[in-house]
Image (cartoon, rainbow, N blue to C red; front, side, top):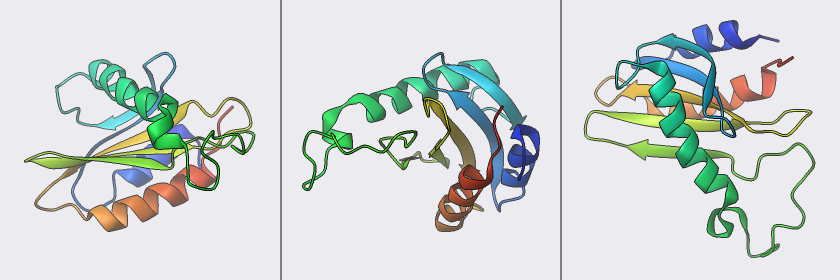
Length: 136
């Protein structure tokens, strides 16, 4: 089971990976980073992606389902959203929420090159990394 650094290094082996980070979406702080940042500063990227993650995790439109419109059945320690994908002209940003034993307020952010990245593979592998990640 990998820790933060090992997890991020493994994420960087994905085709087209430009940068990766583990971010706390409550504080907007990067808990670990690897590779490049889209804006040249990992802390700025962490704060900006945290805003997006926080909105998705808190707005009912994203967290409610037809079976549970109030989101009342959300499992303990389970993030309300599985992942987010943002597509830009030059790349993909995949934010994968990580299930934890505490408040589940962290996510993995992977920045992929659009020409060389494999979005489907990245989503599958980030899911696997999020399941195996050991925090604490």
